[in-house]
Image (cartoon, one colour):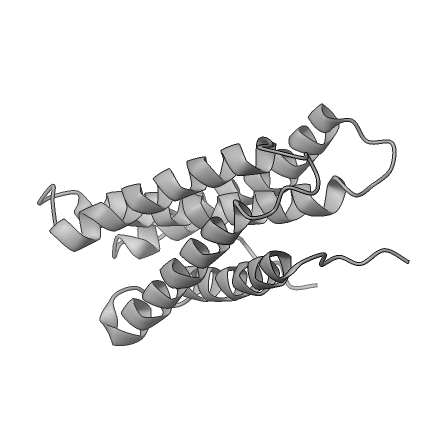
Length: 169
């Protein structure tokens, strides 16, 4: 039987990734602003930074720099793009939207990476199949959820056309 963790770096990476998933998801589904949002958010940032740093200590799969390392660089850039507006409070009128959009993208990237990490272990799947499946299974529902959540995050009512209508049987 194969192990899913091959090194200390891998164990720390796995634990940081799990913490990032839990904290990032919690921040997204809970009300925005306030001390709890800040604490959970900084916990997410810390866990994600640890996950990204440890990613570069893992070379077993590609025997060097690989696609997951490139994705980690993209993830780091998305995280920075989400944190700079909230730390600087600039641009004055849109820093909240920039923060929310990039941080949401950061969590989505994390879920894409999770699905890709699972699919890359499925025998017979080609790289492009893994990339397409992981992106599609996360991005499509992720964008649909964003369309519903965005107005709430901006303090507005969800448009009627986007609301889920429940029918009683």
